[in-house]
Length: 186
Image 1 (cartoon, rainbow, N blue to C red):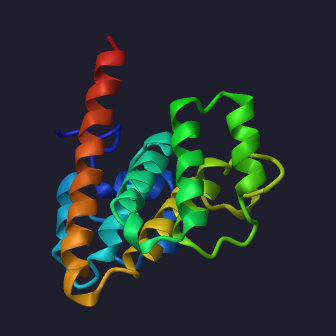
Image 2: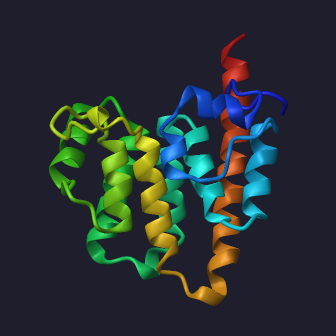
């Protein structure tokens, strides 16, 4: 796709969301977004491909992607993380449901230290009780932190394979979201 989610180039995303430059060091390029993402994956710091996907995806899709990535690492997560992922799953299904939002907000610790706590925080990002929007970082920052924190639990021998699978999943989600948006435009 030449126009992933409204961004013709990676540079366009960097211009639209300057916070991304605080989460990654690679300079924005004039490449199409998914090509740039694959270049990051093949580069010196492949983890930046995770960061780029987190910012490229729309917020709800990014939260779901984080949920799905961590669900693939369930055996490496504590029971509390699995409980948080279940709450995130419910929120993604019904983000406007006040009861789900309240349950998620009540469950999130203000100082997330676990992978799923970051993903849960990204789902609750807009909750005024957390005042996260005033940080200047979008929810993608928390999605990125959650996925990378989960990835850090993977054995060194397996890490690049898992990272690559997560990035490919993110790329597929970008393609599906772009297709959905183009259908919705008609």
